[in-house]
Amino acid sequence: MAGGAYSPQGGGFQPPGFASPQAGYGGPNPYGPRPGAPYGIEPVTGQPYSDKQKIVAFVLQFFLGAFGAGRFYTGHIGLAIAQFVVTWVTCGLGSIWPTIDAIMMLVGQVPDSDGRPLRD
Image (tube, rainbow, N blue to C red; front, side, top):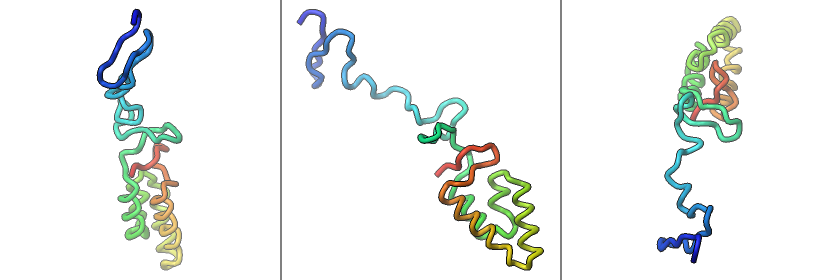
């Protein structure tokens, strides 16, 4: 067995230049916390997750959407004020907008004010 290594932990004979099957374990997690992305990376787009949570945004928007609470939480101040004004000027008829917005937040279609996806 010249030029190779034998691993008694189940890896068997490994030719030179090849890592054992366990070599990749314990290394850095590509989707875990790292500088600039303390909450991880969204696997499809590669964007870092927001520090805001989907469920908190949904609850605020669903129950207090007439006041624009969910949009204030995500940092969209202009939209929050617009939802407040539309809901109160139309005597509540405009409350369908915050309700639909709450559902969109829950399914992940609304990013925070920096464009990062809300985390679970």
